[in-house]
Image (cartoon, rainbow, N blue to C red; front, side):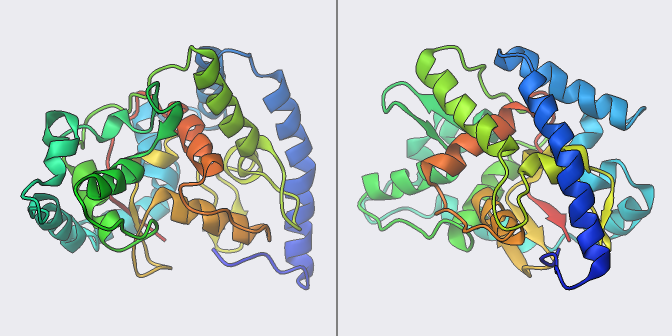
Length: 289
């Protein structure tokens, strides 16, 4: 999706509409219950009312779960998925021994197979939220290897392979309960609803308040289920990218400075964002516009 252009009167009207309804979204976020369990229920109910008849499982397909015309095109692409080679590359990288003879499997429960649905998670030992890509790079440095770049390339391929082995497993981020877990959760929740950038918009303005509406030629996808198909191959990128690459792109689109991938802010956002999709099956990697 191209950045909004203030020189276009049509886009100005769109931005005005988004900003206006964003005030409603702000009220909604403030009205939400304080516990994560109630937040999750309210988040789901919001989309159930907005898109009657769409089952929870379909939200893992993004916009293709709510728009039949878009879905037909997407299903045709998925017959020969553009990310297929990335899965193969990721599997090879995952199983290639480091210089010390270990592989990535040595760093994960169950050898790294079928565990994608449990990320991100709060580490009591390190007192921080950990994402899958973060642990992949920690595994490398632990074994004497240099870390990979965060947004695309090898790390996205490895993450794609690991996601592929978890297809069909329900997203399961443990409910935040301790004060520190709640602190990280609330930080991510605040980011999701906070306005930013020259366009003064939040994640919720697009993917909650205006989910299903057109912005230029694109339909805005629901925030529910967003995370299940990452890493994702985007036609716009022409390659595979991680969740934090997408977060940075969203910041740019509202004309805000993007944060660094794997910054605490983006990790907190992913923590909240993923918890809101608990119960939806992992179907990554995916393909999107």
